[in-house]
Image 1 (cartoon, rainbow, N blue to C red):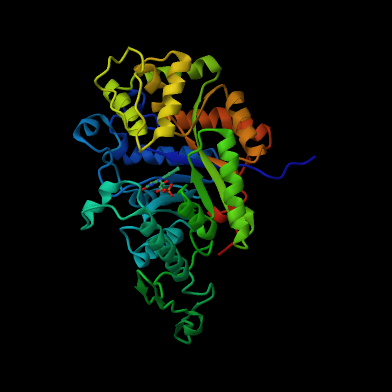
Image 2 (cartoon, rainbow, N blue to C red; image 1 turned 45 degrees about the vertical axis):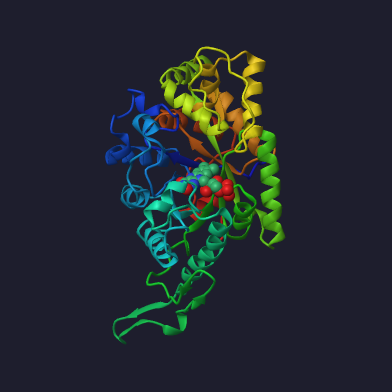
Length: 436
Ligand SMILES: Cc1cc2nc3c(=O)[nH]c(=O)nc-3n(C[C@H](O)[C@H](O)[C@H](O)COP(=O)(O)O)c2cc1C
């Protein structure tokens, strides 16, 4: 039997890597978050691995919270990913370029224009990861005293997405006649004025950017709430998601695909790609050794802080190598708290051992093993209906991405689960998405 369905893969780049202590690993450059040549190297490696896309997250604030965590975290200052991807477009030729921009603090015309421009400069490889801003601290940079309520952020996002997609249809593909002799540059019949008037925005249009070889950029999203899933079902073509278990991932997959069908869209027009935090070695022992090396670099204050972020309970007054104390339920996260305390009790974990279990992958599914182990797990999720592909999260960069490309990609190819060459030129070609 021939197998036609193949995985989509994103290379989720993060300064230094995704492990919470990655920046302390001496294998990568010490200034990785602002080192443009090292980003170029990563982009080229991902393209060598035939990844569908590079993905970059973003926030419009210093992430990290209080001074104590700021002091020890690496992802507090980096390069604006849009600027970065514009540079990477020039040194790559096939790989998709997707980054994040917020509907809560940006303007639809500006986002439409920026991503349409990246789509042109990259030859049809751009994607926009729409977020409504998960970090409440962003509000204070935009004239607000507190973050907008989730429901309002999503109401704005629905309208925002509609405008951006409308603006991307301003010009027909053949609108530019460019007839020098007759002195006709464009055909006004092929120009469409949006003239949007909604609850939050008034945008006349049209956009002053032409369509790209893939028509318009790919719409990406990562919200998991009811509103988030409904917005994705209506507008997204790729969804990234953090799913810590296979069963949870299957439920999410079925739920989202049925919401897509309910809107008269083909479920295959939306690709679901959970984050996979992957530590791979030539053998399982080697992978475990790599993982343990990073785990040992988690500073206790950062680990304890992570526990606080997840449970709302401050463990800092308790001996770090002592047992996990009884934790009163908190309104923020009682189910998550119970889960962690139960895990600690069942396995006799100390506070340090507990944070070591959960801190590294930041809530994403974690795989650690040989190329075969990793490919088995990816295949299982893919075949059992939990994923159309994966957003690959290397614990530390550049080594983690090199390892994935050199060790796991050939194994996936051997199983015919992944391409052996790019067959198209645009991001839509790679993802199997129709032209919009
Ligand atoms: C893989 C992944 C990447 C994300 N990247 C960002 C990001 O760059 N910036 C951001 O503000 N939120 C990011 N998010 C958060 C979501 O977009 C969303 O804002 C968050 O899940 C809250 O929305 P929800 O309540 O609908 O889940 C990301 C989520 C996932 C799973």
